Amino acid sequence: MTPIRILVVDDSVVIRKVLCDVLSSDPDIEVAGTASDGRLALAKIAQLTPDLITLDVEMPNMSGLETIAEIRKLHPMLPIIMFSTLTERGASTTLDALALGASDYVAKPSNTGSLDVTMSRIKQELLPKVKALCGRRLSDKVRAKSILKRTIVPALRMPRSAARIDILAIGTSTGGPNALAEVLPAIPADFPVPIVIVQHMPPLFTRMLAERLNKQCAIRVHEGEPEKTLEPGHAWIAPGDYHMIVVRHGTAMQLAINQEPQENSCRPAVDVLFRSVASVFGPNALAVVLTGMGSDGVLGSQFVRERGGHVYVQDEATSVVWGMPGQTAAAGWADSIFPLQSMAGEIDRHVRASRQSPIPVPGLLPSNSS
Image (cartoon, rainbow, N blue to C red; front, top):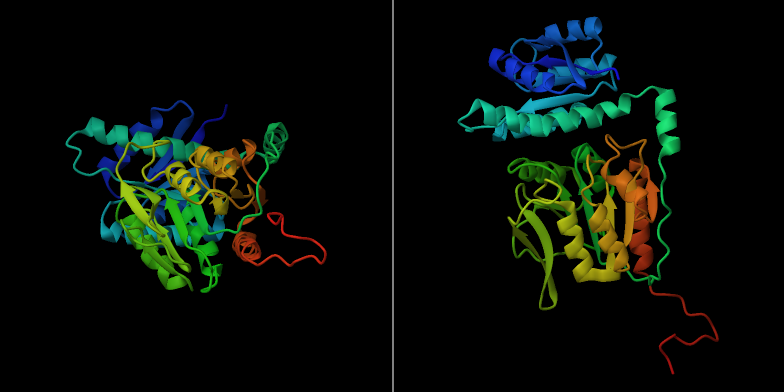
């Protein structure tokens, strides 16, 4: 198998060495070259034709953001993973980078006290993302064979009521910030149910993502907080490093957060949120799985379906990585598969239709009448 060729771009000699060592430790990956700034990177892309670039956020001569803009002019599909700091400035710049077309990011470990620990953390986070993103660069022939071999199980036909939707739950990971930036702004201000979201991101990043989306949307978008009462026309994003769940408090529905063990190597986890939504709302829940790496959301979607709720997933063509939605569909838990640009409209249509009073048919009595 041809190895995945990586171009490492960072102005720090130490970081370049660490990244090269981490990447070279995997037999499926080859470091094609390195560059100390954006200008050198642009020249080396033409020479080395890498399959993926790791890119520092802050660099002299040409910043990471400027470099992304130039790369996207010539190489719109070349995967780019940002290497960012866990600071407010780093989080803000990373979100800017994703908006400009970066594929994903890896946070630089801080205060580990050990080079071995630092390398282990980078390896754990970076290598799966490299392989997931480069899976989209298969040749058309190989990709066609892969699609033909994949079996998508039709949605399991179990008895479910045509219950009205009272909550929308969304789960996403790689590519999620841009997917949310397309879906949520298309949700109208009078959307009749609350929205709860898990986006795999560390602390600080989730707060800044919520703030950015709030400025773009007609609905209100917040970072999740404990004991917040769910309201229609509002969306809450699970805070980084905390699971977020929905609980019933008297007649009100509220948020709760916790730091129970990770699920699917994630906290927050989509499965945790979906399970709570299904437990509290039963058939009145609509769950949506957007682009993301891995399988988080598959078991949660099963829980939603088994309690009579509905599940939508994003299609492969518009997903940055068709891991979470693809595995949910393959397991048979998806009622429908939609392209990203259609998702908001389909959600809004289904939610509103489910909440309309049924039109009585002349000569028929309600089913519960005697």
